Length: 332
Image (cartoon, rainbow, N blue to C red):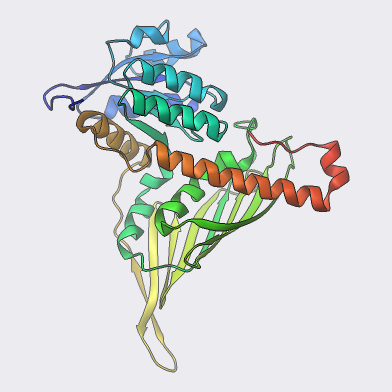
C-alpha cells in the first residue's frame, strides 16, 4: 500500500488515556501534519478529561476509528496490548504499542502476524531509543566491549503489576541490542521483591557473541532517580545521562607515560524523546518505511527480558527455596 499524500494530515488517535496516553495526546497536538481525531479509554471520565485538555473528540468504541484514522497509539495496560493492537491492525490502522509490547512472546508474535497480514506499521514504544544522548553516541561506536547501566527510580504505585525488568530494564536491553547488534550468548541475573509482590530491583550480566559484556541494574526502590549508561571502547569511554539528555566522551588526548585525557561533550539534539518517537511513527505511517523500534525489535527486547527473568527465577530457586515458596516470583 502506498503512503499517505504529503498534502494530507495523518489522522491519529490515542487508546488509553492514563499517564502515557495523555502524553501521546499532548505531543500529537504539537506535531505538524497531524490531526488528533480522538481518544478512547474504558473510563469515560478519564477520556473526557484528556479530550478536553487537548481539544479532541471522545470515542465511544474502537470501532469508531474505522475509516476515520490512519494511526493509533496504544497505551492500555500491558495485558491488553495484544488484544487491542491486533484489533486495530485488523481494522487497517498503523499501531504504536507501548512497551513491553505484550505479556509474552506468543502475544508478541500475534501482533507481528497481524501487522504482516494487514500490511500495517507496528512500532513499539521504546522511547529511550530516541533520547538525544543515544543519538549522540551512535556515530562514535567503535566495538565497545564493556557497558555499565543504571536505571533507578523512587518507589511509586505505578506499574506494580509487572516486574522491574519489564517496567524499567527493558529500555536498556533494547538500547544494548541496538548498539551492540550481536546475539546475547549468556545471561546471568538476580533480583528480589522489596516493596511489592513483583521483582523491584534486579541486576543482569549479559555477554554478547563478540565478547562485549554489559552489567545492567534496574530498581524502583531507590532514594534517587538515576538514568545513566557508560561504555568503554579502545582508548576512550563514553558516559550517557538519559535524564540530562547528554553524553560525554573521555579519551586519551596525548599518549605517553602520563597520558593526558581529553573531554568532549557530544552534540545532542534538543528534542523531547517522545516527540522524536511520535514523529518517526507518523512519518512511518506516511511513507510506509519501517521505524527503528519496529515489532521485530520489540520482540527481541521482550525475549531478552524473559531470559533475564528466567535467570532471576533460577537463582531464587537455588538460594532462596523457602522464600520463593512463600512469595512466588512470576513473569508478566
